[in-house]
Length: 382
Image (cartoon, rainbow, N blue to C red; front, side, top):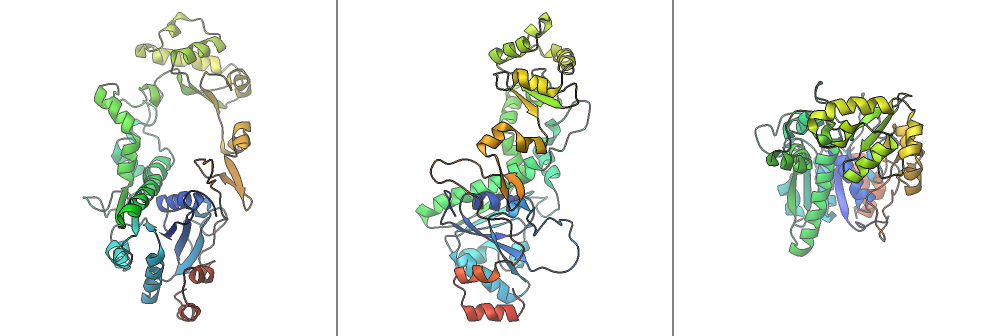
């Protein structure tokens, strides 16, 4: 195991979405992250990928499966907590408390513990205990309203903004911040990462534009929201798409040159009243050639250009291949660890583990006596 977080021990209470994403990030950076899974039971699941090698966000961690309804399982979890630097969980407020593993209990066992929590609405407030998903949280942040075309409803941006950007990344950032603080103070603390707040924070620049009077709030009209002809996506003759982001004057001038545009209407780049007409005109130009022809003309220049790749194409693009953007783990192609480090190079330590796959190895490594392991197995705790 390598990476800048080597030597850090983290307990992950297995859930969905942002918490496993944060755990993946921390494990990619070298932390030893132990997943506490629910003890497998019969029945179907709406998430059949879990427990397989295709559950990419579960990579790089070992799994301990516990029946947390049993008091011995709670004590075992607290035994791990006592040795951990951090615990992370993504359940609704009150769930961990009902399990007997809330912050007060865990911090009493380990005063240096960083206790990371991620939810949609936060640990308190009028909506705290209500259900929701990524789409709801970014809707409440004000950001969903801005995503999409003006003549259509807001477009769900996958679950990248709420679950992963506003949730998982914020939790991982909070954990690392609190771990750094604990080195000096010797005290742990609780992190309350709310996806609605993380999503709002991702929109900090947009809220700045709004306060300055440079963001109308009319969806699809702003420069960065698809309103401008020089910052947009366009269909090509073969039905594939390209992206253009020629904001700066020198980049815009190069765009006009390479597109062989001599129409004087294009010379007033920032005349917003002309943008709808200019979008129509430049769309007609891009529609005259297949995407590859535009790539040969513009890719690698300062137009600020890139083809809109599907996921298969992204895996094969020469830049991504040379950088090693994607890696193969147990036959599954997936994004590699990010960001890069010059000395403590991160790596994925292994494929996802099935629930309970590493029970005995984890318990031995975390100093649980052999006779106790046998007793826990006999009682069905593990």
